[in-house]
Image (cartoon, rainbow over all chains, first blue to last red; front, side, top):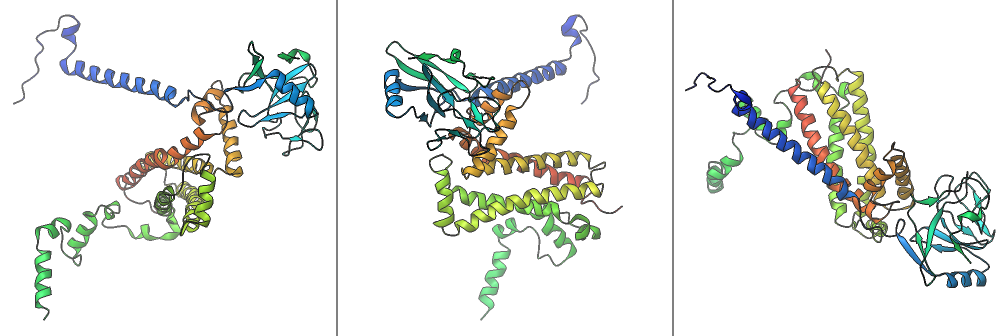
Length: 181
Length: 243
């Protein structure tokens, strides 16, 4: 049997809200909250916390060893494949060049015969010691990673590509040196 | 001689189990023909009776049907490929090599998957063109047009995620281009790419993510959308035809 609806309490907030309205509002609020919570969790979940290779802080050994290697091998840049960078013997110190052509992003190899970096994609050339552009379409020198040294002289390269020394001028500027001889 | 098998056949057909499988008689009457379509989970996608124009190939090119057929081919061949493919940077490339040279019919499977994928992009695109030129997107089918554009979008995404899985130079650099495009998103580009691909460049995380999206995430969404798409066709008055 369907009874006609009769309002008995119309006083105050409770009186104005019908039972069904209250339940519906509660249910909708709960659903909305759950959706918001899930959405807020999804992005941090997919954001990886552990980075290996490019993006990690990579130890490259004592400074003295690196300099000794440069001395014995005619300053040939030392490639670190997992960290995607070269250690270069810059005038007066060591720099770490991000191995990504500033033209269109190819992985630049060092060419032993030419004694310079020679990108195979479009022929950009970079200097052996400073990674400034010597020719080709590259608009600026290779970006540099920050290097930190601890008390014993062991070097660690921060390979985070969003935190680089981005040289705009195509000349060697000693101010970018973080590790001096 | 034939009495015993005939009796057995009659008893089987009148048994409870048989009648729970087949709930109508042999489809030689109009009623049973309708019931055969109506009570079958696969056939019920089609109406019991179709209009004559719906069978005319020049009008629809059967492009929607072909797209669905290719989707089924891709699901089947893809599932079989999953038995031999490991989505890690150590194994992905050599597993594809093995599929081509060692696994029985592996090359055939891989090529079927590859060409069906190319074909599906083409048929979905032609289907979209046909729907546009015949004006089949007009009310009451406007909702289904939106579902269709979503399906086109997800077809492209499936194609893109599958592109990375061979993990060769072509796929690596092609998807790297996509990474850089994602980085161009205003304001959140760097973070967006990092979260989506799981790193600052393509690596093991990106390969695994694309694999999971390719074999589980996106097919689920596409299957769900296809169900809505087909259901809407029926609700909007069956397959479209000349007015």
